[in-house]
Length: 325
Image 1 (cartoon, rainbow, N blue to C red):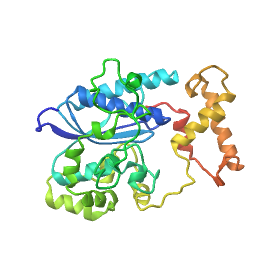
Image 2: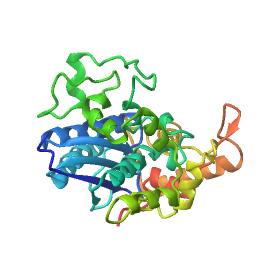
Image 3: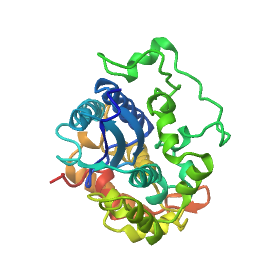
Image 4: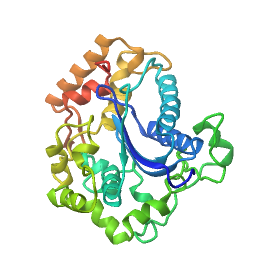
């Protein structure tokens, strides 16, 4: 880690028309390559949150662009190789903002950790597995059980060939590095001071009082939900409704939809030993979208007694029907 005078930044990279992570293995690689970038640039990882079509990271670093380049370059090479895909993944430019001041930092980290809740995937922060929320205050919040670890001889499959990850950093049996070994949890916990205050910020409403609190105590613009999600989501009212727990559990997640596409519909269009949505023609992907829509209308995708639904935007990004600008 470089000197503590390094600036703290929030970085968000979005992919509006195509998912970046189709299944759990993709999330694993993304986090591992984030760790590779952190250690290669001697940065401090503070918080992260990965969604299917974007991610947020909060880091203390002298080299935010270098960190992002290393992480992004490694992940795109992995993603393109796995899915037989070519070209850039996600938008050309990430949104990068410097975070200055204790109140601003607390708000920024809180919003990054609350991704699953804000985007309607879970009803609590701690249900969502792809943020570092569950790596904080583990003992105090009763989360002391560790996942089974990956055998030493298998670790290389999930890291870069020229990895800078220390062998002492643990890896779970799915190939993901332990979040609490990558995130500087001591530093992040010090932002919230106590477990009670941490719990409060994981559940406090995104209302005017939070903005007022920052304005009174800090200079500069307050960190808001709208500012954090700039370039990702323009409907902050919907995010706030999700925050209040108004989540429709029938809404299929992008990961569920990608799994449905890859396992149920894709085999009808490709009999190759390996295939993905990128190995079939655009008109075939459009046909899959139409078939899924038709099956939904005739109640053919009922599961466990419940009927799921998806949006047109989900079909576009899970089937890569539109290229990024």
